[in-house]
Image (tube, rainbow, N blue to C red; front, side, top):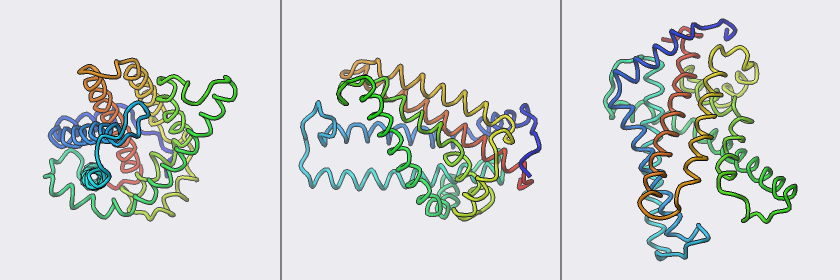
Length: 257
């Protein structure tokens, strides 16, 4: 089913058309995530999770702020999943934010467990890589350069490329349960995904490059916030593009559109 090659120009044209016609929705999803990531970064600083900063807020305030961030993350995720689902079913037809929320809500709960497992796997891979690099280089963990630490999650995504992109896409496009999506993913080879592996490579290389540049920015002052916001914005747009390409590819291959 997934062995037929899709026309690269057709897929890219569909992505471009969706981004053009549904630009307000793309902007909403990307800017929402960017703001959320910047907020979470500040929360980490204020809570003292960054070793260079002491805690600056009482525990009760951090708890309330954490609940607020979690609520915003859930809303963003529903918008994000709703955008991808409606892109697979309705293409470039514009949608209201309320429609995105309504559409994405059932998929949020279905994909949440998958994201937790992938997140844990990513955390384990990054941890193993950090320990391995520290052992081979003879450095202490806190002496590893910032640019290297930003690249390690990208390496983890490369190792988990199929579950990261295919499992959520199968759930969104085919209404699969998580286990069915996992079983289908196991039967698919990257070589059968047409242009997608090339897009993944370009996108992840761009993510790595952006992460490297952001790590070189000053760690305080206005430039720090500008670099952080720009980095999160571009990373969000790249990842959304890769997920959209995957969803559209599967939708085309299964004639769901």
